[in-house]
Length: 120
Image (tube, rainbow, N blue to C red; front, side):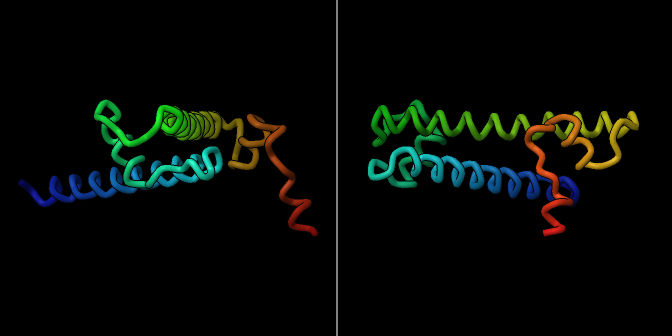
């Protein structure tokens, strides 16, 4: 195998592991807020996420929360990806010149006036 192909596989492996860790961290953090004292061990959550069809130590409620938080994470990531694509299209078309302009155009209610905050 050529060096370039090996490096691509290493990069893909690293990015996959990083994305899995980031997702697990998000799910665990959000689960703690919902379940409190009923929070399962991290290893049980990880095992369930890796293969939800296998028998699990998680209760039905915990399984529902895990999947709900996983879907929530996916939704956030999809929304971010969609916004990046919209931004690139609007920038290429000359409609916006910066991320700040894009955010004001697409999400006017969600954008704070940073210039006012900087003045304080």
